[in-house]
Amino acid sequence: MSQPTLDIHKIARLSRLALTEEEATRFESQLGKVLEYMSALEHHDLSAVEPTQHAMPIYDVWREDESRSGFTAEEALANAPRQSSGQFLMPRVVEE
Amino acid sequence: MPKYITTIGLEVHAQLNTRSKMFCPCPVGYGADPNTQTCPTCLGLPGALPVLNLEAIEKTVLAGMMLGCSTPPISKWDRKNYFYPDMPKNYQTTQFDLPLCLDGGVPLYDLAYPKDAQKSIKNPGKVVKLTRIHLEEDVGKSTHSGIGTQLDFNRAGTPLMEIVSEPDIESAEEAFAYLISLRQILIYGGVSDADMEKGQLRCDVNISVRPEGQKELGAKIELKNLNSIAAVRRAIHHEVERQTEAVMRGEKLLQSTRRWDDDRGETQLMRSKEDAHDYRYFPCPDLLPIRTASIIERVHPRVPESPHAKRARFEQDYSVSAYDAGVLTSDKALAAWFEEAVAADAKVPAKKIANWVINELLGRLNEASSALENSLVKPTALNELVACVESGKISNTQAKEVFDEMFSSGETAVAIIKKKGFEQVSDTGALEAFCDQVISANPEKVAEFKAGNDKVLNWMTGQVMKASGGKANPKVLSELLRAKLA
Image 1 (cartoon, helix red, strand yellow):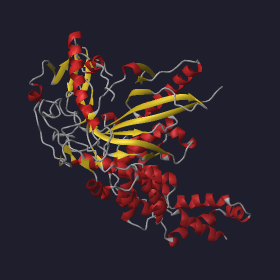
Image 2: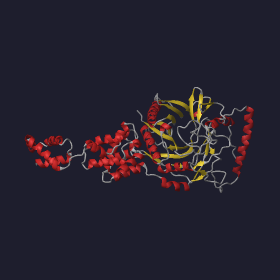
Image 3: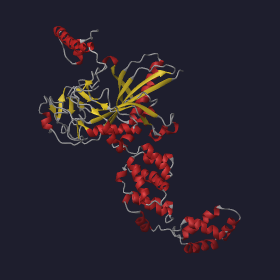
Image 4: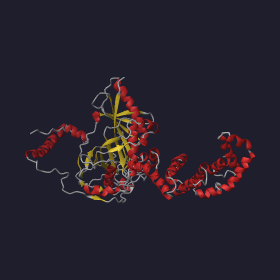
């Protein structure tokens, strides 16, 4: 059985996490165990099991299209570290 | 010189015109004060849970039906992970492997091509194949300035359809026609208001160039920041030229994303393939899948007549040319206006009403930069005017004068005709007296006519017209003169 590959540095980069070498080694081993656990499925014959789209066997949960007001601008911005003219303000990000 | 083949695919985002957002009941709307249409869900606050908006699902399925798509029996929601401040959850809820619509296509209507390209359509009747349409949420609006980046989350969570085409488009003109046709269909279906200026319709272009004979596609280059359909056309023209020149120089093009600068008329590199995103899609645990059978059943009766079908029906029912039918059906409201005008009195030929709508009404609205909904001329009033021309009550020239006044004052044709004293004299008794008068006063002209100079008749008609004070019905008059001179 093949061992799933895990690139801890790539995962850290995608998650915007700066890991020390010690952390990288620790998390690599921990996440590796999760993958190992998942690969336990490969030891079972699943050919008769129907794939599902969700862990819960429930469908069609929705609401009608009715609108209702939520926060005021003050409430929406209550936790904003910085704000300017009713908007969240953050360091300038290059648009991409 | 070797020939080059251009391959284009479009990704169009269209906001749905629902009342509330995709996953929360916040109102959807353009132009409200910043951050006045938010709640814990669309602000991505911890613990807030999404609930699907059924109407948004139905509108997407409706758009799919109008575009000939199929809908899988089960559809579900996934998370697309990335960090950007306009999406505070750090993932966008979208659809990955089971979207609401698959396949289908966008028909390119002749009139959807740019005006200057309508005479040289390379692939008439082409239908551009679609890959899929999925439903997702729009993100917040960021404004970049000297003080930093400002964020307004009113738009965050607005239901957004992404319509993805196959790389099936050959030219800037086809891309233009695709967008015009698609927009028309979305508006017909009442699915989206599709106003590009308001950001309700947005478009990214994937474009590649390869030498003729080469099988595999060239490097895929994505264009962003296209803010109008005309800009899409300009950007593609520029990019085809840039890529062709590069390939001819022997340069190797790399997969990348470029930003269109409409003022400078050029594209600039934003990122290359090495920085390509890894979105790590996975099924959204907060949203349950949907079974689409009952939705399809409910939406089916809501599918409206397509612009294409309406155009064919207009040609058939109203005996108008294919071009005129295309103009009349280019806008759903205009088509309805025309049909109301025709229905006001079925005796008035529809073809004549079509001419008045296309040549006079649309021309005048255009000159006045005014919209049809603001027109003071109402459908029934136009029918009445055309009826007056058809019955010979007024001449065509007079009718145009009457129409001008109807357009500016909103008065009815009959009232204006009366006021201007335009009622034509069709009473042959009165006209005969004028004819006799002109004939006896001009014996030399009568001789000329009898010698075979038919043009004299026009001159004599003019004389009688003058004598009648311009009120003679020209049709009745020329018949009368001819009979008298015979």
